[in-house]
Length: 480
Image 1 (cartoon, rainbow, N blue to C red):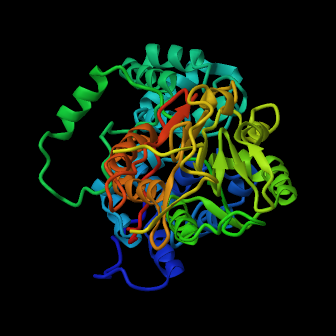
Image 2: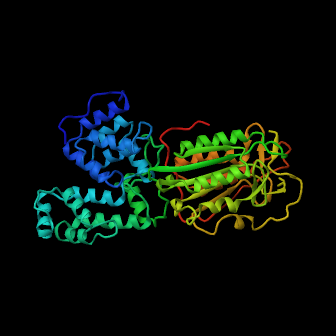
């Protein structure tokens, strides 16, 4: 480790690369080796082997989009793990802030973190004992504890599902490290990413007094049966598609829909998605969009997929701008595991702002996204069942229950989309999962009514999600 302390820079001013240079100048040779080891799952070994300085490692992280001025958390995570917490100030982080973001934003794998923790617990004498036990299976070169674990991994003697060799060594030489291995197995079994200190996430924490100590929180969490959570720490959050139909061949223009499209774009961009909006989409163009997204190679590196449709509709289907009626099920079927392997086992969210019938729910200038909003519906049941694919990991959020109209303020946008976006903004920072957020949206929209108090609306989610979906908390605030 470098002997010099952090450079004096009260406000941590300067360009991003200047800050990285300062951070690098405070890292010694051992720190650089630790960084390289922790990055092995995300940067190729060949590139890391050629890296002789912190700047070399940072350059690879920048090139791989793992580090940027707008998204420096991965480096903050690395500095936190290797114990260089004083350097977090140059990335505008504190130790507490990193700890509270780790559960949803960490990128270092559980296995990689385990090996690093174990290496820190193996002193020089214990290392000699381990090398002696392994005997001729090791090369006759000097090794660090981290180097020994890296060698065992490279020789396929250990991996994330096979820790037998490691457990035998620890049992004979450093039994206390078996607790780390058991902790790893528990976390891996539930697929929950928990930081090394097991502290509950809450990104809005800004030095406020805690009701419980971190030790109490840790004890409480370990006593709870952990629920599975979808992984949200891949290279990209994912793609968000917005189909926004305003004008039609003969149907009424959907005034106010651009308000919905814009707020969706801003919110999902804030959540880390790559957002693409398509306006006035015909039947043919819709098929092109679906094919493009189905075959998008970037899904492999994404966490999630979102598809939003703003249009007229009825009974489990939506209208294209040239007034073809497209079944919702047909749209969603493009993204099953068979059709789109890149999204297999990942959450796929569909939000539909369109009527699902003609009936008005009894109890601003508003309009209904239906053709004849005063007519009786022909069916009130089964539309959701028929729409969502019989496969895991889908969520369909409809603006209204089957058979009924949904309302759109011609100035402010639709009740459903505006409520959805506002609740995402409010509840994502509180680490609420998507179903809890949609429940809050239901409550909000159900309490709304037109000026006469006679027209109401109730959204309807349907899902086959297998785990909780909790979006990582964005670093920046969002003003709507």
